[in-house]
Image (cartoon, rainbow, N blue to C red):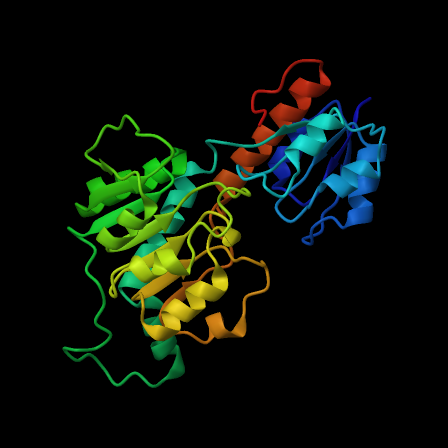
Length: 316
């Protein structure tokens, strides 16, 4: 019987789909440490890693003849896994695209609305007991309807965000991507990121995390944004240069930001937490029960298919 490690706890209904496998459940919330990852490669036929499980080239090098044949990642992003090193070791890496698209797009909209309408500040004001009642100039924010949104990365998630903005809020859509997309709504393709930054009211980062996108949004890009504009990041934390973002928010270079991810997650610098003009969420992008079940079932399908000798449906 094939032996698999489920690296963190999943909704119970997912485990039923693992029938026929020898399943070891690791129901902890913390990521695997380096020694746990090495043992996983040595002792299991398949492993479900998650965000924070840093399967680096060094980890693979320490296990030159792994028993493990597949890392079935829970999540669409897999920049925590050195895919080239995994392939060199003969290990297939899979992910869970599609299942996360709508939930992540919804979180982007949540952050856009919270940031633009200063909802975090308002909620803190009410909880503090210091609210003195409504008045005409209280917490005036940015009206999103009819504004221009810039999408950085027009893949599945970027397109889902753009549709919500276009059809839901009547926003004009511009986007920066590796190539022009065929879309079922009006959107302007902008081939230069700097040009996009200067023309939008809200810029949403939706590119995959990779060495190529590390600090894609840096101080120079932020400096080109309009003073009232907001930056939203639902991609990976290190796509945005965090220190540069703090500086821009402190100096009023941009109007605000909404973040679901952080460069050194879960550490969030005090300087960022002290700012009122940024909304901070604890990586809630795919955090609905339905989506977690769907993601888990995609992991199981990848595991079951591979361990039955066939190519899994979602290789990266």
